Image (cartoon, rainbow over all chains, first blue to last red; front, side):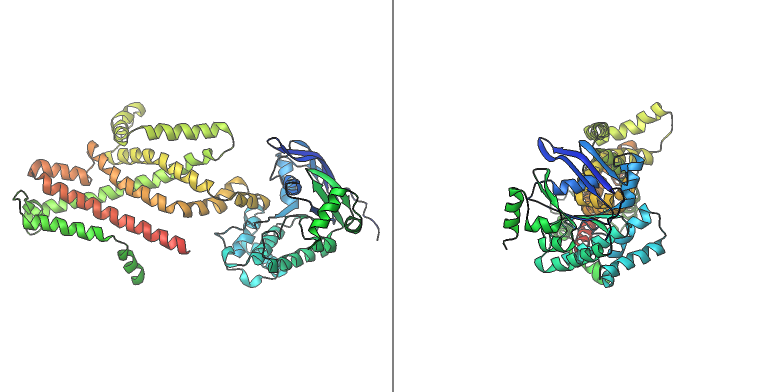
Length: 250
Length: 257
């Protein structure tokens, strides 16, 4: 296989983020090419969620620069547009709209933000519901679905906006154990289809399967970065070794 | 429908029935000899006329209150939105409006709007619209606080999810946040309606022919304050207990949906 010679799709340059005195991100730099699957792990409070939330501008970084497709992500119209057209996000708590049916949850973005015709949005929504294997639930409300089903709906909702990159913020951490697999299967399929993704997760089995790059963070810094093979078998830093030994023990 | 109605009546407090019973006992017994129910006795021609005169005030009391609450809800929402901003100036505007309006007694506001505003703005304002305006402004400060609390109770994740599917601020509020917030604050809005029904009695001072004004006028001609004001109390009680029962019924329906 030949390496694609494209520019990095996402460039993170020396990004720092503070919450009051607490330094959540400390001059983080990172490149992601189209088609790459990056898995971020690390102890809680290490800045991994903050990093992807900065990429999606749910948090504002104080220093450094994030570019998507060469365009700086900020509050300017072009900065907003590049986010709107390229980045989808899935949250730990699903964050479905509880007052809307599953179908309405999926159609809201395409119809209101993309100005798509209702009928087209309907077809698009049903297409992605089939892809996450719950088309029969389209008329229900989120509260009537299991956690695993809700998270799959959330994935479908993000996909309806046709993003080039998907961000997953601990997508299985709020799920009962028996529901984790159905969500990970959907994400894995998505990865196989060539979707670029950054996934914050503690599911190391999944990471091994899906990731083509592993990233370990601690105290707002990237401590270790590399292919899954070297990452899991021969991590360089002691901090990462300790973390892996604790997380893989069970 | 029938089932729903029966549930509705089941929510009417038994205290209402008891109160009617008490009023009946006191009057029919006539133990003290000070009661003169003839003035509103539906068996006589004048009694019927007087009673009809009093009860017709309901149109105005309800019309005034419902119009005022509709306006105050819109006004309240408009005032609440700047409070949700992260910037200081919009927040300050909200604070100043709420504090200012809350500091003015409703009665004073009614007088000022009716007698003062036409001079300031050189316009003529009817008694009805002066009353509506004063009640709506006064209530809007409370509505704004209710809306603010309701909107702030919506989880941050709802905004973040809206952001992640590229909804702008207006669409986020309109399709995601407000529908959820309004569902949560409906009981509080119902309570405001009850409050409004009671406060509308103050509009009688500028000559609005609502329940209280009519009772006052009848007292002047008939000299039977005890009976007439008792009828007045019962009128408000019936209207407000029905509205309260309606609010509770709505609350239960929202809980189950």
